[in-house]
Each structure stands twice: as structure tokens, then as C-alpha cells.
Length: 345
Image 1 (cartoon, one colour):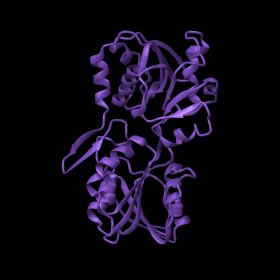
Image 2 (spheres, one colour):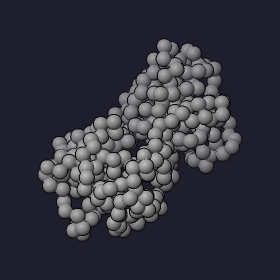
Image 3 (cartoon, helix red, strand yellow):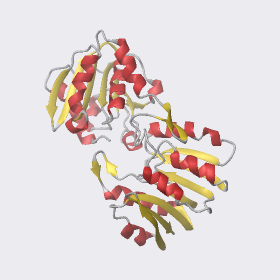
């Protein structure tokens, strides 16, 4: 996830006068950067954000036109790109960006040195382009002009991170490089599913649903569920979840909500159950407050006597927060480095 305070580094090549600032008629794209005040002088731009909290940062900015990857133009003068840590997805974004630039258009990409930044220039070189490099604040900022490229490499980059059906032994799921846990079934989620009671029914939410493993199991095993809310802040995860739960159409009502759970836009109420495997990382840094805030949101969403079932890594100190909010808390099991809680409102 992007530290939006670092997004201004994308303009470092302009500040150093290596590149001329975009003119008012330039066609610009900001991709997964989040809003930063230095962007206010861009007359108009397209914006793609995978994470809802980054998308929300552009709300009210009159120069921004929020689009999806499917709406990409092929004629951008400038593309500003923050690269993710996952290598296949980072290369794919470089490939997609180059494919979306007009001839002689300029791509400016950045990442922290410990999150793939040191690889950007070599990835660009493989496409046939000539990268230029600056470093600041433990980040690498790389820019290049779109000239003649190796189209085969561009296509390989893009293809490697397309949504695809992955065989997980007893399960097949559509997933995509860059989604959290995209190429595995999380052990914690497995443990959570195995410890759910037969009583799961009514209105249920999977908060932080990812590509849909927990939701798929809920709909397969608990036929008294009336409505299932699938909630995640990652747009790509929500797209995959929709594909993976198509087979359940005609049963329970399924709602897919691209929402930042930790924001005021999360307004679910009167739920019978919340089932969740909440995140606890912001980028590479573990933050207990993220899981605690998910617990708070789950409590707010549940009706009186409603139940939360959640999994957490064994070292995370959630017990105090659970006991503060809920009328009763029970640790159902602890194994394989995970603990499962039942908390009743």
C-alpha cells in the first residue's frame, strides 16, 4: 500500500529539470498513487486506484477522473505509477503502462528500495526502453520515454498478472498476482472454517474477503444464510470474488462491496454473523490497530446477540479489545500459529 506522503517523489525528475512539466492539455494518468497536494497543478488526469482508501483520497478533486483498468486510454502523455511489492504484478503494471502511452509519452514509476524499487530500471530495460534513475527517501524513482519496445516482453509482463484459475488441490479459484495471499489458501482461513458452528444463518458478512475462499465455504456449507456481504478494500480481490461465487447464484443474496472497512462508508448493520480473517499489515509493517479496528467495525455491524467468528495470528493481542466490546468472548482453539475467537455482542 502506498504512503501518499511519498507520492510527491514522482515529481522529482521534474523538480530536477530532467523532464518538462505536463502542459495543461497533457493527457495524464495516476495509478495507485493516492492523492498528494503536488498533483493539484495537473489540469486534468485519469486515476486508477486498486485500494478504496486511496480512491477515496481523490474525492472532491475536480481535476481527477476515476476510471477502472478496463477504461484505460491508449494515448497518455504521462503515466505516474506506484509499483506494488509483488514482482509479477509490478512488472504487469509497467507493461500495461507502456502499452497505454503514446509514442514518446513518459512513464514515471517509483517504489521503496525494500519493496522492489531496485528492480524497476532492469525491468524497463528488458522492454527495450532506456530508464533514468533518481533516489530519495529510500525510494527509487525511474522514468523512461516510450519509443520502440519489445512487444513480446510487454505481453509476457501483462499476462503474468492477469486473473486466472488456480488449482488449490481440492479447490479451484480465480485469483490474481498482487492480491494478498493470491496463490495459496490461507492456513488461518482454513482453521476458521473448520471451527464454525452449524448455526451460521441469516445475514452474514465476510469482512476483508480477499478472492473469496471464506465466502465460498460459507455458501457451500451453510444453506440457511439469506444474505452474504463480501467486503474488501482491494478492487482486484472483489473482481475475483465475484467470479468465484458465481456458482452460488440462485441461492443466498450475495452483495459485493468495494469498501474501506475502516472508513465511514462501512455502514452494515443488524448482521447475525460476521466471519473474518482481518489484515494486520500496512505495507511491510505489522499494526495491531488494523485488526482492532476491524473488530470495532464488526461489533458495530452486528445485531444484539449477533456473533463474530474471527481468526488471528497467535501473537496478536486482540483479547483485551474483544472483551472490552463484546458481552462474551471465547477462544475456540489455538493451533498452527493461529487462534479462533467467538465473540457475542
